[in-house]
Length: 77
Image 1 (cartoon, rainbow, N blue to C red):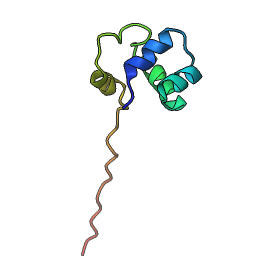
Image 2 (spheres, helix red, strand yellow):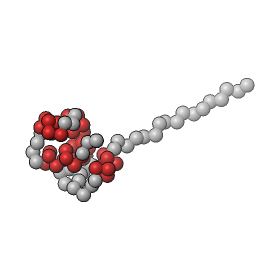
Image 3 (cartoon, one colour):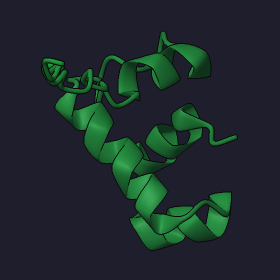
Image 4 (cartoon, rainbow, N blue to C red):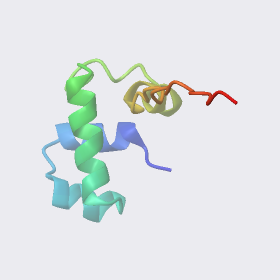
């Protein structure tokens, strides 16, 4: 499982995405996504230190929208 804290901490130390990929052995797109989502949620560069990885997972999880419901038509007999 990816450690969101490790990604953000090393990113703050100045490592770029390729260096993070080599050091953590995570996919570059995953690293980029974690940093981007944390930034959009206002957790990066400050605000993430007090969260556990489980809390990060909940905060960064994509919000799913319910599927549209379609009207059911009944044909008369």
